[in-house]
View 1 (cartoon, rainbow, N blue to C red):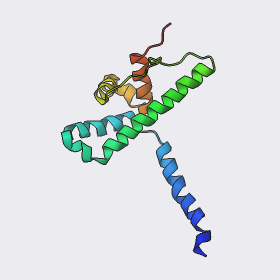
View 2: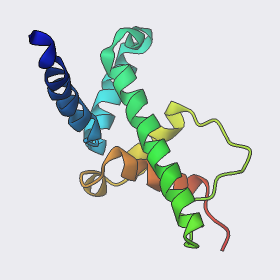
View 3: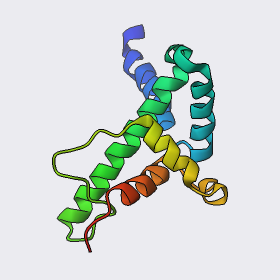
View 4: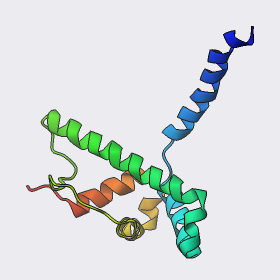
Length: 127
């Protein structure tokens, strides 16, 4: 009898989790957590925030790539033009860039916006 309700219960557990992951992290909160991790040094590896921040950057980068490819497919100019062979970008480079964004502007940004800003500066498209 309980098995009939299992799919319903499972879907109730999945929906809130999916909604939680759909929320973007504000850039100031990201930088606050990143700064706290930097202060921990090597012990940061044991913090749950490390994986959270890595996932946030990966999700933002993936979304920006999708945006860029969709713009190209639609014949619109992309916001940034990375090299075709791909590149490695370090966390320090991203954080350094995020910290150069004026605080007043940063307050209104999500991590994805910060990444868009970074990618546009690092990989400008030819005019």
